[in-house]
Image 1 (cartoon, rainbow, N blue to C red):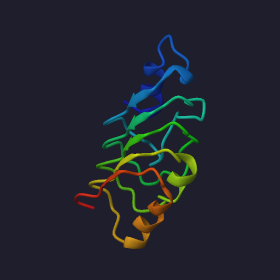
Image 2: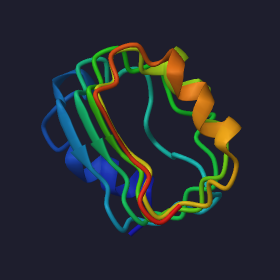
Image 3: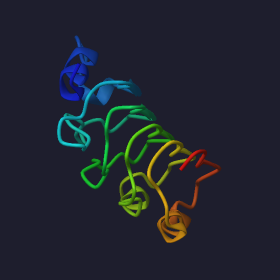
Length: 123
């Protein structure tokens, strides 16, 4: 199923601001980006996008309350600097199984002042 369609199903009888957890694992991202997620998901604390075909995350909306982000098993190689701007309260980040090859890419995550755990297995 495509990512934006899964989000539509997750919203059944709810508004985006009612959603605290959103699991989109194995949904397909047609253009390699996060699709269907907007800054209306202002209460979102947990987002999982495991194995969805992401190549970049620069279009991630502002998610001030997001604490845990699962991005494993995608094809992300950069764009990580947006996480500090868009998810300032992030505590747990899983990037395992992505295409991160350069340590300078990871260096940008220092701006995530609340980050407690970072998984980079098999990057």
